[in-house]
Length: 171
Image (cartoon, rainbow, N blue to C red):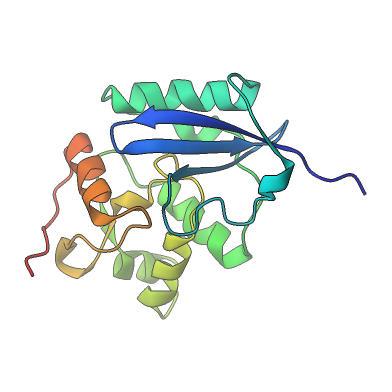
């Protein structure tokens, strides 16, 4: 069987350098450099860094518009068919959260009829498509700012950028 070959492009964003990874057909992930689960599941030995690529150029255009403050419809981007069935359900739900809006882990659990908000949190945390599949729009109870794989300060920046309402955690 032929080994899958990945390409990687680095994207400079207001929240740090993003690693965009694709193959010839699908986007496999967008990760903030050094975040938790960075490039999880990707064979980095089989990866070539590129300056241009059909899938990644399209993703870069979407990100440019997003960081310019324009709401983007990311549903047409070719996301890789990865993850467990449960993760796919949660990630599909995340894609339905409108720009500038938030939901809580508990609300997602209720809507998907899952007994555990923690299970939802785990799947949200493993989302490989930062920003495009907006896991940053998920908050803890009371709309509190909670965990984010690349750090809560980046999550706060993204939410403020979108004009979303949330509660800062006061230690």
